[in-house]
Length: 304
Image: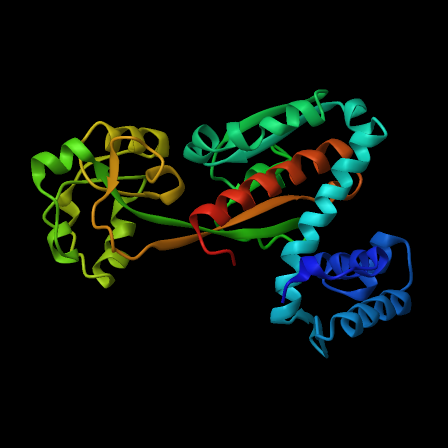
């Protein structure tokens, strides 16, 4: 369905968005300072207007239908844009000040976050961002960070988590390495090449084996706990490595080892504290990250 061609009642859209994010009518009512029956009526009216079922109700709670999940992607973007436009229009974004700490893996922090966060300098120049390159979820629970970008959903009940989609990864190598070692013609041929690994390269062996690449532990001639170092080793021509397609496809002198080799997918979760509901500086950074990362997921992956 072409959601963008349909006129929405914004109150109904806000009720749906809050319900999806809070997981219940009561949670949405609390956030919107409304009542549970009102939220239910607004979503019912939205479903009637769209002629689809958005939310399924059961004794176990609420779940989104496929149509509901599809609509959610669009209304989130609408909500984030509306918030930023409103703040810019009345000057509030210029008044938002303070530090926000964002944590992500070192490779994501170095290669992707600088571009994603660039619009923030114009929208809210008073916000100072500190980037913490780390993969530890404890950064949030111990309040070392305000926002985390992770590949797994947290199970702590006091955190807000949004799935932005799935990045895809594939096997890449430097062109000069493949010129020397030869380009594989089949998945089996890839196993004869040198490999560059990350923190635990053996974790890659099982999925590659299932994909027809019987790689061995001794194939990893270089490895590093740092994703940035591993990426630089690939660019320097040490061998083959599993890397995000959003990086590999854009890097000069780097190519996919086998053009039709299937991709691996890994989720991108944006995680923060409940303070998101009340802190304008965290909200504006969170929304900037959500838009920028979702755009990159859309370019290099199939959106979830």
